[in-house]
Amino acid sequence: MEPSDTGGGGHQRLGVGGRLPGNVSNNRGFSPDELTQLIDGIIGERLRLALEQNQQYVEVEAKRIQVERERSKVFWKKVRTWASFINNWSWAAVIVVGSFSTGIYIGLNLLPSGVVCPSESSPCYWLRIDGRKTAPK
Image 1: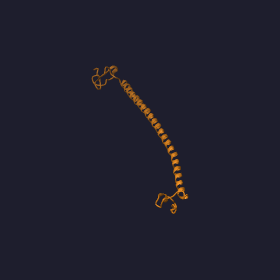
Image 2: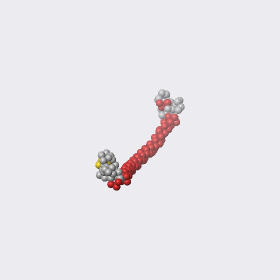
Image 3: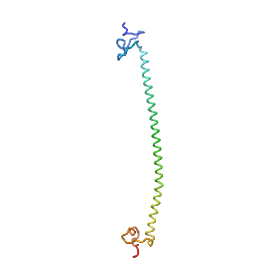
């Protein structure tokens, strides 16, 4: 028998002329059990690397989600702060506008002698509910 056909232990070698595919030299023959173990080792290593990369991805994704939640919390805290501020000042503005409007109403309609309108074409006259109240002539 030629050395390229059989190897030690009576097992047949891979390839032609004692070479592995891709012209890689083979100094000894591989048994099917050895090839199975070698392939299983390679597959196991690739699976381990894939799982490790997946675990790293999961960790990075978890950190990203945590940072996103923190940003969201900060954003909504700012929104609540500004909403509270605007709410407080809007009530103050409503009270000021209401007081001013009440003052104008009282000044123009209930105390006509206190406010003198120069003529019937003046804004003072237009704001009065009773249009007959004008300044004495």
